Length: 316
Image 1 (cartoon, rainbow, N blue to C red):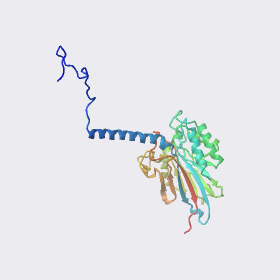
Image 2: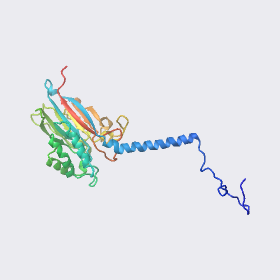
Image 3: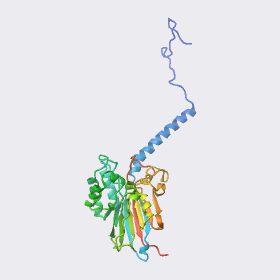
Image 4: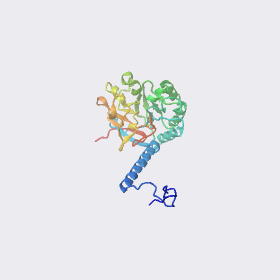
């Protein structure tokens, strides 16, 4: 029974020195549900943290072998180290230094750079081109470097970017071009590049022509977006076409299965990895690249440096 004061008003248990449980008892089922929800929130936070910091800094290497019919019966070989989608922010010169050091360690005959050197779409979001070129130039101490430009480079002026890269010793194909390259072992290969099919759309760009007298040499094409396959349907002179742009999907399901892609024309088929090029000749490979765009995280899709080995066919 509740005690009363002399005026008949109720006296609370707390005033009488008694205690009352704080809150209401919850059932075991509700308690487990709350624990589960807390664990889910913690797991999501952990995944988000990994996607932002862990996955984006986990540099990986992929290696592919391409058979060169023209080299049948020889011991010819060539090795290219390929990188795309650098997306270097103003404070990321050390990240670029680490990428370049990793590339130099791969004993390349040449480095192939597939564009999107800049981060973002406006000044202040990216390391300036002079800093980017300065960071890339140590590659030339190990092997020659060739480049094409990507859609983010266009935001910062393709011509100025190409001029800066060329001035730094990195041969940059703009708008398109091709040249005969000689490897350390003396093999001759055509390396060609063209405009980004995402920036200009396929119908507004041209494939480079093979130099006169080099029609029987193996030819490798670099072009930022795999939408270039729309042009290859008309003419494909290339043993291998190398692309980036998609980031491999950037945010993928477990196992690296992409959910979306940023291509104009070709959809998820060319979002990552090797495919037959149109026309029944050659291959096309899309690399995951190195950086991020739109959102600064990756999931089940780590940054990648690609190594391409051109080899003589095996004699059965």
